Amino acid sequence: MGLLGLPTVASAASITPSSYEATIGIGETVTVKKTVTLDKSGPASSLVDVFFLADNTGSMGSIINEVKTSASSILNSISGGDSRFSGIDVGFGVGSYLGDPVEGVSTTTAYSLLSSISKNKTTTQTAIDSWFASGGGDLPEANFFALHQVATSGGATDGIGESDTGVGTGQNTGWREGAARVLVWFGDASSHEETVNLEEATNALVDNDVKVAAINTQNAGNGIDTSDQATDIAAATGGTLTNDVDTSGVVDAILAAVGSAVATTDLELFVTGNTSGVDVSFACTDPLGCEDVGPGESRSLTLSITGKTPGVYSFETGVKGLAGVVEKDNITVVPEPMTILGSLTAGLFGTGLMRKRKQMQAAQAKADA
Image 1 (cartoon, one colour):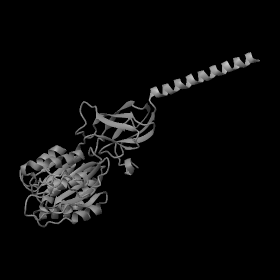
Image 2 (cartoon, rainbow, N blue to C red; image 1 turned 180 degrees about the horizontal axis):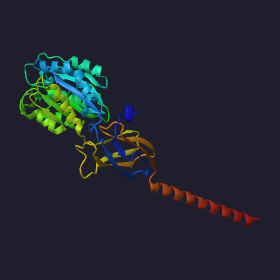
Image 3 (cartoon, rainbow, N blue to C red; image 1 turned 180 degrees about the vertical axis):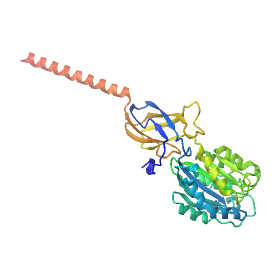
Image 4 (tube, one colour; image 1 turned 90 degrees about the vertical axis):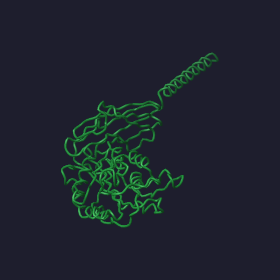
């Protein structure tokens, strides 16, 4: 079994060292240099979650129907049937959106989670089949609210224009820890900005490491790219924007967009396990940087561990987007060296006093005799 109980796929990607042990004092920090090397074949990301999000208003009918018809082929291709996705461990999720909450639409109608991330392609197919095309006609739509909800797993918005506390659906997307995240977004209309504006939507996506693969049925500068909305989001998240997509090209556009999203990866470390008594931080130390790393390439990163509380702490250091690539860490935290020295000195001093007392008592007893 791989990291977090997920099956390990065949991959030559690696992290060195594969294990690390140390004993440190409270307040003491150790730094471990790590080298991450990607597999030479297949995509750079081997552990990937792909979420399909579609505008379900009336004008999207032809595109929605084509994706429904081709869903099985799309899912099988991304699951490894296409050479661009060889060896990938992929989960899928599905959602839809309509009008924005500012229009009086309920939050769970504005955005609906139809299937959280799952490796069951039948579940994903059923969710895509539940897409419909109805209503609308009153541009704009809830694009930004939906993107925010997918990224944050239904978190509350900042409260732009509706309340101080904001609104949210509470619908958990189910992103798998450590997986690269790709959001395939289909639409043909601009977004409302009263509930969630461009900045907040972008921040939610970036903060949650979600790459957006935008599929626009209109030409550049129109549809979801009105006022460069989709252009800005794709650029900020390291994703892609494909314009002028029609029914004849939507399948190729989806596969190309997802393929581009996993062709390179931004290397980032994370930990799972017991780190309650240590502070853990990471840094990219490679002169080439750790962004847009391709197959077969290596990068250097560091793990810094600072002791906080005495105890033994075992955890794993993984690499986001790489299945089964982990380092096992065992850290023992002891009281800081000065405390140990102080305790030892006090102990020796006390022993000396006791020995001196016993000598004096023996001398006195001899004199009395």
